[in-house]
Structures are given as structure tokens and as C-alpha cells.
Image: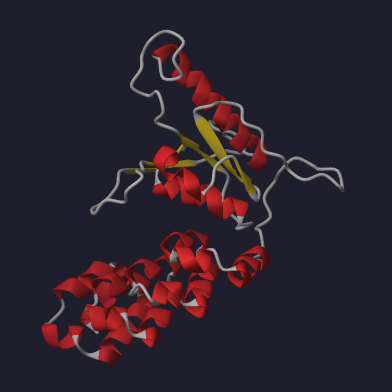
Length: 244
């Protein structure tokens, strides 16, 4: 019970549990029911165990990252994971994401209500590029797609793709590294230009959410993370709650 309490607080605690407990299937089931992310620290046999994986993603959608490859292509398991957390779609197999029936399921997911500008009855939100260096996503539209991972990084491209698929992705934007090394006057990434580019992209997010960066009445809080075309092992740098 002490180990289970530790796992509930931090999934990685499973890594330091007694070997006998790590190989106990009933214990593993209870562990992932309390904290789905513990699945990442289970043995390969348990990460390939359908019942264990289903229990894990039912508790935490992003526990899908720890599942064996064939289960990350399982319609039911991924559907449960995405219903818990739309970001779990990143960990599904490409074959499943391309499946027409699964796309129809994604389109049926409810979009959380957020303040946004009024649209005419027949209007659809249209995304218009405001900068060649930033790519907006949100409100079931984006300026990018999964094929732009070389430009936006894997995670950024998939966020754009999830928005295109109609998932309720929180509005945001990707900053492309293209021409980033150049500091010549007039370059998109010269010190004189970068603030304006980010502010322009931020204005799109404010328009989509109805919240405003730096506002005390209706603050827009940002989460910022790095990304790359090839997903590397280890933690990525991530800043949360910018704007408090």
C-alpha cells in the first residue's frame, strides 16, 4: 500500500519498487489505475498487456506513450486515451491516425466551450497566415499539418494536424526555425523583428480564446516548449503558466 501511494504521486516510483511487486500483475493493474503514467516504468510484457494498458489510459490518456507499438494502433485503446486527453493522439500509430473511421471518431469529440468572437451562422473560422515564421493552430483549423515536422518539429506538426482533424486543441502557434540563424536587418529573426512576429501570433490566440496576455481581468496563460523533427530521449524544456 505504501508503494501504491508513492506511485499515485509519481508514476516513476514503480521503477524503485521491489522486483516481486514489479512482476505482480494484480499490483501493476492497481498501480496504473491510480497513476496511468506508471505504465512507462513497467516491464515490456505488461506494456503489451491489453488490460493493463487500457486501465492506464483510462486513468491518464498520455499513458499511451508507454504502450507497446501494436496497442498504440488499437482503435479502442487510443479512443479511450484521446477521450481522456486529446494530446494522446501524438502517441498513436500513423496508420491509425490515417484510418477514416478513426478520423470520424475524432470529429465526434466535443469541443469545450471557450469565449470566442461571434461568427455568422454560415461562417467557418478561416486561418490566414499573418507571418511566414509562425503557424497558428486551434478552433478546428491550423496553418500547418503533420507533413511539416521538418519545419515545425514533430510535436508542433502534430498539434497542427490534431486541429485539422477537429480535435479540441487549445489555440496556440508554432515558431519555425527557418532563417532563425540570420540576424541581418529585416530578417524574420533579427532582434528588431522577433518581438513583432510573436506579438502578431499571440494576437491570433487572444482572438480565438477571448483572453489577453498580461490582463488581470481575463488573463491568457501560455505554455511554451521546444520541439524537433526527430523526437529525442530525455526531458524537453518546458515553461508553464507564463503570464501569471
